[in-house]
Length: 439
Ligand code: SF4
Ligand code: SF4
Image (cartoon, rainbow, N blue to C red; front, side, top):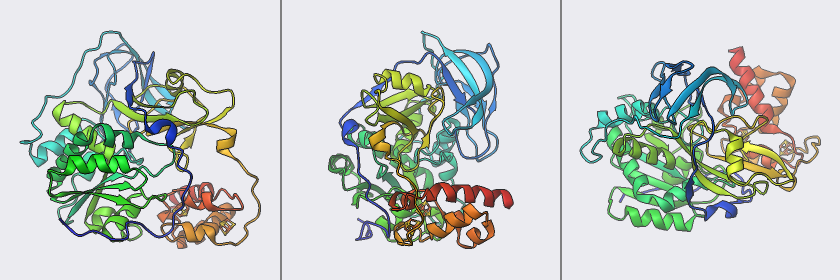
């Protein structure tokens, strides 16, 4: 076996309450078809796909309905069998209106999947092509087209594939359920990723607050002498790529560089499962694995729902919201996006929907900075959040750039730790946007 970091953690970070109990023991349920499907053409990092259908088109489950535009883009498949009722602008869970294909599902489902391939004899090129054709995107949040990550430049020597099983955001439990319910599929996906990239060492990193997942994965990995399952310290944002790499291998990914510059590719647990399904079932990216939880939802669940299912139909399926629910967030509480329009759909990389009550949101009044330095201490990438937020607020973008505002990964750790309740990450996010526009 290969040698790994002994410390299994990184500098900085915070320990928010976990809130995983309401959903962690709920096995995945398959949600019935919704009454309508809204498929945004931009569900991935890179150029939006371009629609191949129009109002009145009949589609099957898996039919390509929008084609990728260039390398960093992704095709989109119909998540249901039915009729296209419109190609129009519709709000999505990022809060912005996006061009979308609206489909009315029909009762009888017909499938238009790709041919099944043998996952043992498949070649590297065939895996990458299958991942590209099935439109799989990274499930870790950024929704980067997975086929691009599987094709690193020839001059980059990659020696580890890390599978990220941290799920360090509070509340979310879908990766946990995958590791308990489908450990063999997770590892088969990891092996396909290793084969595609020609890398012979795989590591699954799991936070040590998930002993059952560690046990399940270790048991399934027993037969592989090139895959290691490692527990890492439970600390937010342990699941951020650079933090996980540091914890597992003690390698630092320098600011502005990618994991592959340090010889590593990180993929998410859900991405590995999708890649396996794409090969052995020919299944395109048409479902989202989600945790629906928070004190404001009547029944917490882990769900497999079709991509494009509107949030309101998912909330109804979980029994509806309680009278004291005040906020709906898509994603985790640290990096998720608050929703104002519940007709927005879940997308390929959506990880969960949180329905939160007043006690959970705990909005406290903002006070002036105490100069306590807690945000600096907690920032895992060594930034000075207090100054970055201040410069952003004052519109001093050049000064913010000089302090590496672009290196911020918007993890929210600084804002969480600030005793003055200053919305640091919100100001920094704004500053980053301004820096991009000013470029
Ligand atoms: S949001 Fe940015 S500045 Fe704040 S802790 Fe995370 S990386 Fe550091
Ligand atoms: S944690 Fe908040 S109060 Fe403390 S230095 Fe940072 S911004 Fe100021």
